Image 1 (cartoon, rainbow, N blue to C red):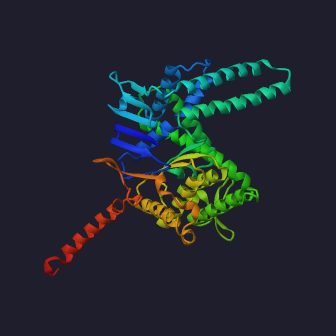
Image 2: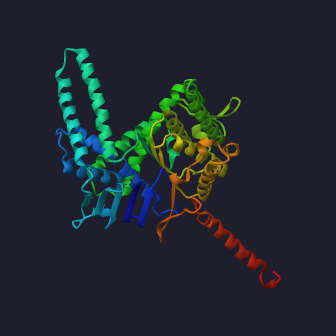
Image 3: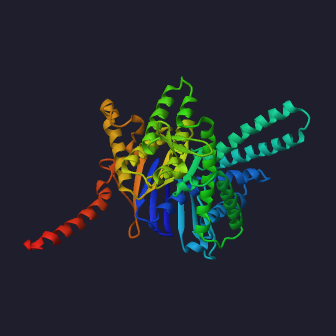
Length: 460
């Protein structure tokens, strides 16, 4: 199991968090939910940055200073700005119980970095160096081959095989089991209300801004990470829209699944049913996205409700993740934003289907909503009860949405106490008292008002 330990980073004074297949972070605003989520995403996505940097280098040998240290420094600055902006901090990420990296502010107000001695094992290092050497040699052969087309195609096929091997070795080093990672930002409706032309301009301007910031470490974190994640998300939305444009809608994608893949079609059909319940209609793709309400009536997505706009990108991403069968890693900020509690229930059921779609899928959710915890508890309870009474439980909750309790971890973040784990290990559920804490405060206030109104038997 992976774990992150954070000390004195932004609003997080101390947090020690075990990262399970489903990790939920709940708390008031400014308690560090997004900070923790972004740090986890930072470390889990670093294997891709290392792969790119090392692959593009001209040497087969691993230069730890250039290929690892400088790469992680550059990525940190892209995400969070100069380390000196954060004061004295220390962050340790455990890729497994024996393999970790540590980031901190050093005595010169610069970037401090440590790793365990066995991070790059001797066997893994030899495999990686050998594979990189073969790739360099093959690249030269391809560049030199300009006459025999057949031979060049064979060389390129061999190159692709070596690239897959190269990626696999790096993924093993960083304990990465995912081939599809994304950070789904809050404020997702920004990808709905603008024309494709404006989105193109925004994407280009963001990219230029990020490139400019890359050479200026004095920028604050707010001027870097939000723009970096927004750019990544805009690019992902563009790809999703291209896929939907080919099939017009969710149902069109289901029809593309071969009849022999019966189970997959059933899962996608159930997912589509949940999506319709959330949207209160059918999504129709195109230059102007629409929500078909009933019969032939529709509303343009840019004019739809805030809940429909805020949820559509999560719905598309979850559906495509289920359809692809990829090993997905997702950070989802505030999935409950702008949608009614019943729709929140359907959305969590859909995300549970995504979670269960492969054994390696992983979701991190940040939320303000105790109701999200209640829904997750229900899905865990459905799993537990369903082990003995599967048929009866299936009548209430689709089996693909059941969540095994061992997959779940949840933390409540407060300024005073940092990150408090709120799983009750005796019943394998999220602590109901923590869920009800907000309601209890409201009830207490109401009782006090009643005491004022009717207390002491005095007439008012």
